[in-house]
Amino acid sequence: MADDNLILLKGVQIYSENEFIKKGFIKIKNNKIVEFGPLDQLIHEEDFNVVDVPSTYAAVPGFIDVHIHGADGADTMDATEAALKTMANALPKEGTTSFLATTITQDVEQIENAIINAGEYIHLQPSQGIAEILGIHLEGPFVNRERAGAQPLQHIIEPDLALFKRWQTLSNGMIKLVTLAPELPNGLDMIRYLNEQGIVSSIGHSDATYEIVTDAMKAGASHVTHLFNQMRGLHHREPGVVGATLLHDELKAEMIVDGIHVRPEMVHLAYKQKKSDGLILITDSMRAKCLKNGTYDLGGQEVNVEDGTAVLSDGTLAGSVLKLGHAVKNIIHYTGCSLKEAVKMASENPAKQLNIFERKGSIAVGKDADIVILDEHYDVQMTFCRGKLAYKKGGNEG
Image 1 (cartoon, rainbow, N blue to C red):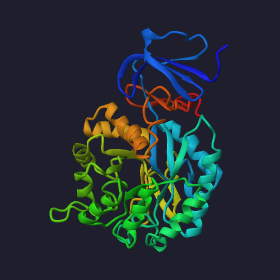
Image 2 (image 1 turned 30 degrees about the vertical axis):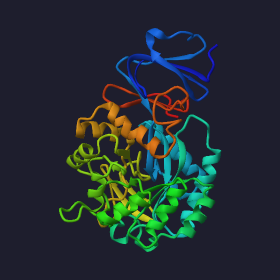
Image 3 (image 1 turned 45 degrees about the vertical axis):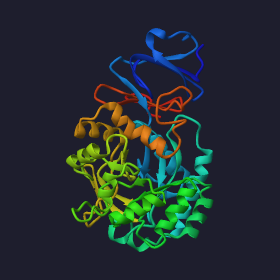
Image 4 (image 1 turned 135 degrees about the horizontal axis):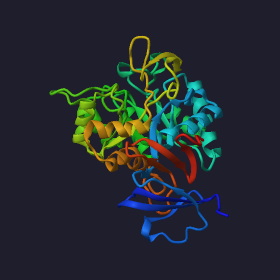
């Protein structure tokens, strides 16, 4: 009788870390990838649970969403174990196998409740079978009021290092990425501190000039939150945050590729300038993802969702309902990039940015068995989270 901890994916195209295998196999044992290769080199399969995969399907590394607020009716700011479980169970349907639980600007108590809850959940979360929470993305409250977007104005504050240190303690050290505006008082000092602690500093909701962005880079900033959205744009006499991002390879740029937040031609421009090495696909999705049109909550504000667009009452975009698997399809369509390049932007780049590439972000022996099976149209057919089937289209949906 086959062991439940032994899975053999058979016949699939494989986009591994260093090669493309047209018809191959992947062996999974106890959450990890233990062997893969061309099908004609397969031996010792008798102990494995065999999953025959059509030869037109592709195995790619699980997608990693470093910027997601919510899904399927749940939000990080709900500050409950049930909300995080709901998100972790919903995300494999779109190919996401791990993510950063993302906060929003709110009063101090609500932010603290959310990060305490996330920190506790991360240490107790299931070892396989649902998407893994890798840490917390603190988006706000250290942002610029002039570029607030859907960040509630009344709760925005200047960067406060003592307060951040308190939050990192409360989160059990789980804050891994911080979005802030470097032009604010104490902004550069906070970036220096984050860099010293190995936490990713991201320039976002920012009105910084080109010079301030370069100062932030010298201080250790390496990331840009949702490129083009809620930041100083490109001008021929002031390159702004957008210009600096497009010019400097040191900055990895998130992008919401839903065709709404960023027009497809601008996605193409960013891709031509940053290439697949410099972009990270995100969703920035809120709780309405996976649900019907209607009115939902984001950061204590009413958000109206209709036909894929989420806006505040004044028309301001308020997160998205984008699925990361759709972002992969969209960027291929908008730019003509290859599936390999799209997967780099959805899996490899975020893993490297979070310094977890030794265990996630590619198909390689010894890494977590976070694997997505895509059909010839790039639609998600199956998702394995650390070696366990978490989603199968038309079948087991976790």
